[in-house]
Image (cartoon, rainbow, N blue to C red):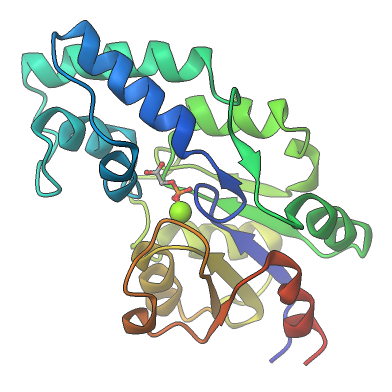
Length: 220
Ligand SMILES: O=C(O)COP(=O)(O)O
Ligand SMILES: [Mg+2]
């Protein structure tokens, strides 16, 4: 396996963003007169983008979908305001992420972000955390007509980098990341410390417990 680029998921893989997501979600609920949800509950709703998160947070139900109802639209407006105002209050890199990204970038390895988080949050968050410049391609949840688990964002990224999908490693924390990688034919690595559960069932090529274990995949 020759890895010529690495594409990273964002939430749950590079950064632990759950405190800021849950704070914004509960502030939006409060604006609508609803009681707060536990952080773990909000965590279980992360992974399909902001609109799904808001729909689930308002219905307090994993199955809820964004249908554009008045309540959801108000919730979305309030969530956007609260989250944009505090993207990195408590959001932190997981251990070894910053130094590993820096080292990979220094080696000249092309790096990409493929997240389901919308661009309006993804781009300022990466800037606020000082790593925006490390990435050659950034594909957010609303950059293309389809998001993970579609193969489209991965195919778009490989195309922009001028490499084959089989040479791009996808690193993520959730079912959507591994499914997208499989759909695209990319080698993939699951991180165990993120927001996904039932990790063994996802069928990832490998599971790592700390971010700098990634170096092993480049030396194979
Ligand atoms: O914000 C989300 O819903 C998911 O974001 P991720 O794809 O970076 O995990
Ligand atoms: Mg994730």
